[in-house]
Image (cartoon, rainbow, N blue to C red; front, top):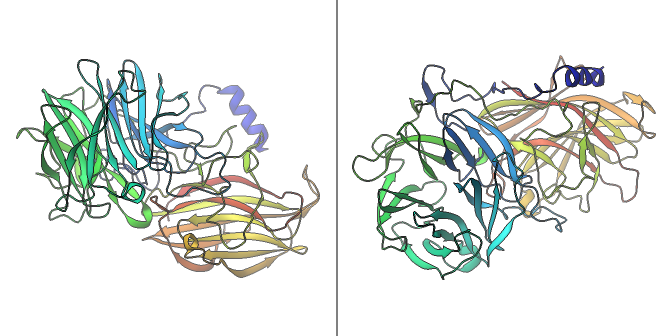
Length: 538
């Protein structure tokens, strides 16, 4: 029936598949001309943006998750839609996720009719991709400057066509940090043509100076950057009459008397309506780094952000001709021939991990895990960002197990994790909670048996010989705590397992999603078919 419905929709409404998505769990647009921060209540850390006419485009750090370099679009800086990714592969030879590596603090710019994204990979160098359309296709990554330690890169094309690049430095890779350097690139932005010059040293006062963004305004060169660290930092602005400095600096945004910790690191934009705005992040622990929007006042000659340098939680929306209310997608019916853009794999994608089916399911193949200790080293985990402080994620799955020790289900994943799965044991299925609070340091997964079920079916449909278990699984998140439930009919849910305190990942927030595992050394691959994954209210 689902296959027939998909075919009918595709035939009758081929141009109307894309729908405007409004979240049930977080919508920053108050509908009265005001907004409430965060404008993106999800882990789009280290955000940067550019304006092209009345369109705004945003990207953010994605580290090792793939696809990477998310591209979001807005017409008013409040309502954002996830429209694509600029990076499809980073570590194709790695057999385990490269947690915390890859894309650090990218910048996005529009120059001579093309979009450019630069980022620093702390282990490999400065990279760049470009595209004529922000929705893609994007070019393959080009290594502009090879080397270790360079992070948080941003270009500036000057009025005379010269290209300058500013970047920070990662102490963990090169032995020093808190300094910013500028060098000149070729006019096409493809290679360095000068050596770096230190233009700012934060020292002890502005320690952890990083994440710089480069601008030019009224004859002044501006570098806007955070200092003070992720959780408690502040925002600096610095100016000079030369791109190579010297620069004078001023704190332009800080927590002050508010409850908003660490309001810093992001991008400034001047709108077609003559307004100035700044997007920055706030670190929320296990939820990751969420995105806030602040007005910018230049009347003093400096970009003072928010309310006299302190963050505003609610404010009037930026001037815009748009009345669209839209949010990044969270739920997925798996009815399209490709996954929703909200999904990322924990490592580089391999088609043997899984793919959509023609009849409206996501199929995950059971991944043969080389180590049974925990899931930290498993790349075949399909995950998405937590979308709000309070939400419920529910999925309907069928596990077709062709051998014992094949299992799969729903998970909340970070440095520690907990999942609710079904596993084939003999000719029965067990409902289990699998938990590992310290996965990143080699902790051993604990397995708790919750229920035992007879198979839903056997040797049915077009599968290879297998036993089947149909079940609905649910995670509810509230205040950083995750609880679990299941249902056999999709109507009545029963609480299952113990509450789990979420942990962030390596430089990312915790994520929720699906996975399927095979702990046999040799067996035919099992299948997990997800009918849908829905995010809604608690």
